[in-house]
Length: 311
Image (cartoon, rainbow, N blue to C red; front, side, top):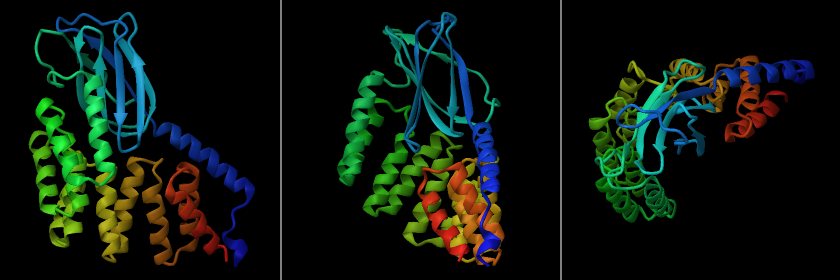
């Protein structure tokens, strides 16, 4: 039976090449123009795209017409910060989709003294410094101090409401799930489409042990018109742990469709296929995990599963 599930070198090469093509098509492109408060293009402005969940940062400079382009980003939610000497920085969240479907951004930044921008009186450098200090407290599991530091940032830059995600994560680390849910809802009041906050409510309820509330929150998130890969995966994961494999597979497939380069839902699809007794499908899913997301923890787990399938 060993040979029936062992892929030939040619098949592996084909899957690898196909996966590279799929990965390229799954990348996102963001572009736009940086202007001043009068609409005049700003040359040599710095535009930064940050995704803390992926640990990735991209930077570009504007040309003489104020234009910038960044390619190779993963689909998902990114923080975009534009700054230039003599101007107040502007920051905001954008949801990027794969390919060239993302609309052009126009980012207006104002001169110092014109008014208070989204970062309040803080410079982008000060924001990064204080955020790094708060993150250090978080990483040391000094939960209460981290919450205090994050809330101090919110006071100075109230428009950076995504900091509530870190506040909620700190409360979850502490085991105060009601406070975590409240922090997620604080963000949803100002950003009703925040997928991470919607999913966070569901996960916090799961950790709290309130499975009915968890399923209701995650179902609502996954069925939202603005749902993305995190919502689909999280609902699938809950269904999987509850033993509803067929329903879980449906949501894992939607997560994969939303981001073909993400290994987590593919790995869970492989586990689901094993539970359903379909070893051939399981081997295919596990091979795809390794091809599209080779640096992920799931890739290592997938290799182990393939070894088991080949026995």
